[in-house]
Length: 327
Image (cartoon, rainbow, N blue to C red; front, top):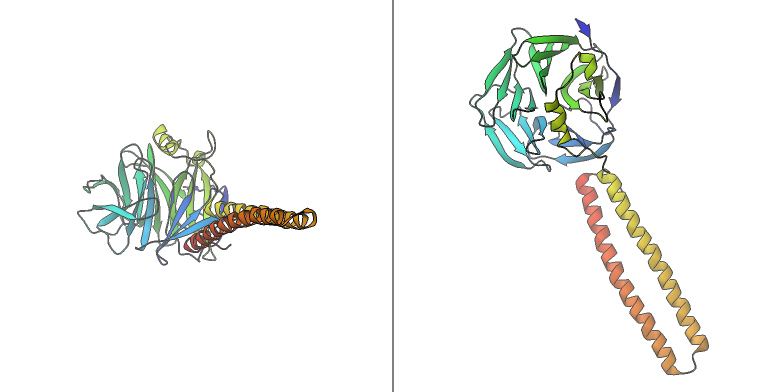
């Protein structure tokens, strides 16, 4: 058996010890489920924390569906339901399963518009009608997670202290197995297409020997496999531009308010100088009154703009509190 070749380990900022149970990727952000907090943590492509979203359920597993542009998730407590979530993690529907065995992991079956679900001893393919079929079965140990990487699917398997990643072909026959280093306890898998040809990776959500969550990086070439066009084309449906995270966008909006405030201060200073000059050179009361009206009009417009900026700033502060970001 081969030992898995790791290309690096990434510590997760802002994470609680060992509480992440699943990871999903939508082409722009990584989403990590924390069922103990009923939250989804959102990370950028460089794994900087971009925000947290409170959920109304304790989602233990999550995957992204590039065909329907939605997420699928499940709870440990309600094994017969797989929830369909929008991009704000609102429940928009569900798949009702005809059994109540505990799901341990979930993945979108690229190219087939189905889901793959990992159970203790089985991997099952689940059409969105809810009628599932067994793909492969394991007599010893148990499955922890599954990831569709056509023409293969990868699973996390463990037996006591042993952890492996196993590759199966479309017929459910095991093609390869790789031992995960003993320093890590893997939780879930996600496919990352990378930035160019041959740059695709399998990322492993794991905890290290100090119970700290980490992301382990492995190139798909290290698995002796090349993902087919189904997985890559599915990822290409997703816009993968490095868009700014919420924190950066909020910072730029606040900066724009500060620039307008600076401009207003210059305008008010100029109006004060204009009034002083009018007092010095005016030859009549009418000239002073005209200058005063001009300054009053400018001040009225400045007050109107200041009120608008205050409202805008208040909305940004509320948004920061919802996203749990600090100004």
